[in-house]
Length: 110
Length: 114
Image 1 (spheres, helix red, strand yellow):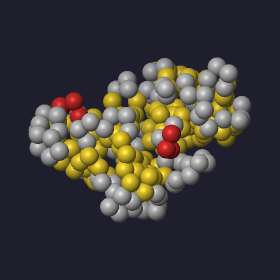
Image 2 (cartoon, chains in turn purple, cyan):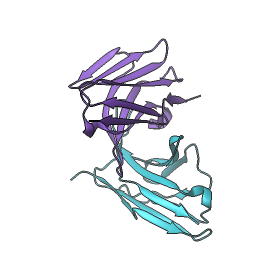
Image 3 (cartoon, one colour):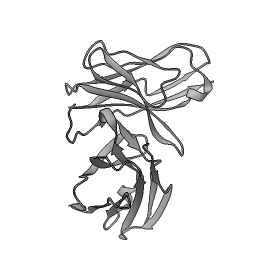
Image 4 (cartoon, chains in turn purple, orange):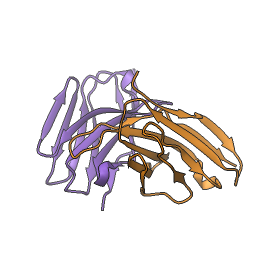
């Protein structure tokens, strides 16, 4: 079955790197996603990675995928206070369904 | 502006009083979906629709109904709300197909059932 797990909370200082981790169970997932939810707002797609890739970099964001361990991570370089939000990883299930993790609340302190 | 809109944004109601949360998208997307977000549980899919007149159950459909009479609209209906349906609800839309597709989310509807 599909199940996605994340740690619930991460606190970093401004300027540090943040690493948010996620484990998933469905090895047939073709795409894995990172969504960001700012306070009082809906989810917004940050980035995604195709399952045949190990890494994807997009400006300050680096996504690493370890298919053997079914582990996905999101690294945010030079974390800013504006990065404070809840980050969800998600895998694509059947019929375009997104299976979300529990979300990691990132708190960036000055 | 391409967007998904939901109404109302906030709603407080009482047990048993029927309500409808509307969702509309202006991107001509075939796929639409409803999720609920609860602390510690992430987002769980309630219902989805692959196209007009095609709807199907997600992971937590009990107590909810949907309809898809037009491509742009996908209302969520609670015929007899109960307190365990107090939650934050999100509507989303996206393109169909086997390849990568981004889903666009509405701003959310916070529902409290007393």
